[in-house]
Length: 211
Picture 1 (tube, one colour):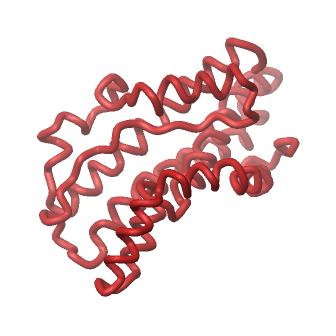
Picture 2 (tube, rainbow, N blue to C red):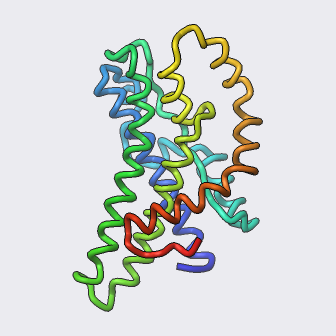
């Protein structure tokens, strides 16, 4: 899927994937005893309840228009109250992991569908593979992006859950420096993610991504 329509489809898939990611956080928090997301009306697939104008619309469009080579984004974080979580030690990590796991699950599901598409759809398989391939790529990118251990991304919450409480001052310092750290990562280290995405794409779908 190429050109302007292909870019629009990519952004639509990105928006829906980040919505699923955030809803997963909300359901994970609720399973741990915190209904904050439900009370806030965020346990819904309606993208209008989740869209962040900068992260969900403006940034992806700018990355497409300026041919950045990648498109990434985010939605408004689903609210939850850590004090309500039953598992005080690992509750935050469970909530943070849920979004990453749901993106990986979507990538695996559509990757497996790509594998069986030629057997089921015959000559029509290519059109489906093009669409499903975008879903796999977007969800792999989102999963890896959110694994970055820089606040406010999920990877930082998972990592900090492993740290003792005596490191709270260090965690606060990392959170204070999060924006410049994230910008540095995206500009200098994010390109290193693409070969990983390519290998995972091939592993899941059985086809090559081309990078």
